[in-house]
Image (cartoon, rainbow, N blue to C red; front, side, top):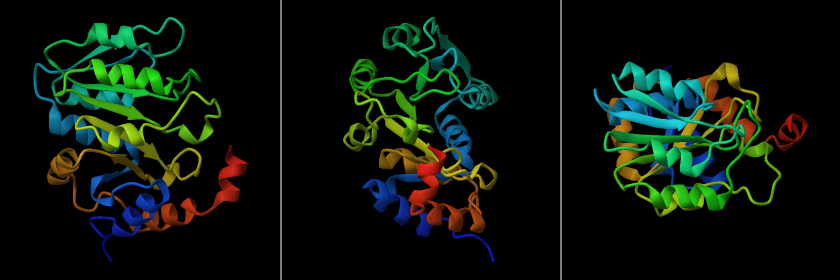
Length: 216
C-alpha cells in the first residue's frame, strides 16, 4: 500500500489545526526536505542564500548541492539580526533563511523584526522562516509568521513534527507557502516522500495535547 502522494489526510488536519489553506502546504521528509526542495527549485549556479552564522546547517548543505553559495550574517549576540542579514543580500540572493526560535542559541526574532526584514527584501527573494521550535516560545513579542505569510508572495513558514511532537524518527515536516511556490515544489518532489506511518502518527499527534504539554 503506497502512501497518498498528496498526504491529504494530514494536509486537511494541519490546515484545520493552524487555520491555513490546504493547497498551500508542502509536506516533506522532515522540514529538512522542505528546505532542500525550495533550494532545488529556486537555486542555480551563481546564486546564493543568506542566513545567520548559527542557522540550521540543512539550509547550507542543500544550497551547496545546487551549486549556490552561502552568505552568513554574524550573530555576535547569538541572535539573527535584521540589519546584519540585509547587509549580506545582493543581486544573486534567492533565499533568506531565519530560524525563529533558534536552536541551539535559544534566541528568537520578534514579530516586528520579521516584518521589517520582509519589508526590506526585494520581492523576488524568498524569506523562509523556520519555526521548528515555535511551540516552546512563551515571550509575548514572538508571533508565528503564518498571518504575515498569508498575504505575501515571497514568504515560506516551516514547521516540523520532530520537536514538540517527538516524531523525529518518522520524518514529517511541512511548509506554508505562496501557491506558486507550493506548485513549483510539487513538480520536483518525489511522489511518495511522506510515509503512511508518518502521516498517521502526525495526525494523531496534532490532537495529543497532553503529550505536547509534557514535552514543553
